Image (cartoon, rainbow, N blue to C red; front, side, top):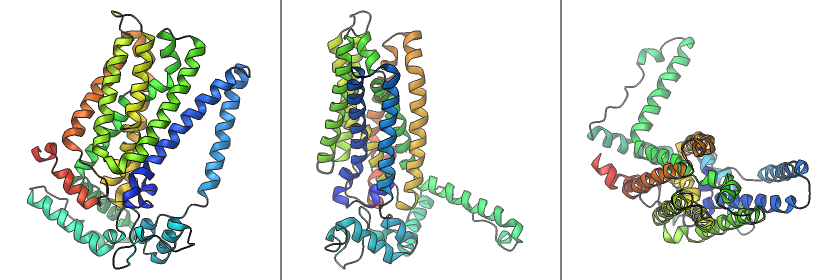
Length: 388
């Protein structure tokens, strides 16, 4: 995601970063379709072997293609490799055939990053931006960590490790104080992305449909339908995210998830009886809501609210949080249904989604076509952060 953000023009950034989720959705559709076809063609013993084999071939194709990707021009600029950054822009914009697009240059013909001006990450401007943030923190009464004692820098070589540890800790504390709002936003979106339950609904869709009374043959077709809906919804987001805006899509998608989870609760309620129509409607609704909100926008918003110098680490941290939460949610799905009832997991997902909806409304601004400094100012103006 960090790479896609740094190689995309700002007015296409949302669409290009969201392509990652579109590829994931296409993978679901292909896997469901292959599984449906193999069910009637081969035995179960060969079924899973062929499925894994096809996945391995696709992974090798991806690996081969990545060998020809140019380096991120933002990273090259940060390393002082300006000529290489220029060549990377040339390669990205038009393969170098007609020269780089004007999307990558400002009025003075200075090289800019696809998405974020490279001038913003030059040392002089970076220091100026950090100085303003540090002054703002001081004005707010936030104490910053003291610098490492000068005596340490006069010590022997055996103290180098200690010096590095202290300076890195000071840097980490400062970054947290500067960007704690963005860190909280990333954590909430990452955990809600898992706790909305969409992953479980996709993974256990055949079981859910069977429990709701859908026949085995119809269940296979229903999973293909889910894959199709997920892919089409994600493509729709790609075509509209830079026009409609991140915030509207995020709030709308989470709202659809909440309504769809209510439908699923009704479908599996013992009082109303199992309803296959409600189960299919609720499942499709959750997939649509996720594909227009958490799926593409969690990664996109995280990549946009952090400056380039820490964006990669922020996205890595988000992946860790999402993975851990997904593990917890997946591990407890079936056991929770067996122990507490069929509707209880969906109630948990609904509560988590409602909290995410409220948080998104009061804490997350639109981030489209803005630099990190502009986004940071907009974040500070949101209701939650003004109150804090």
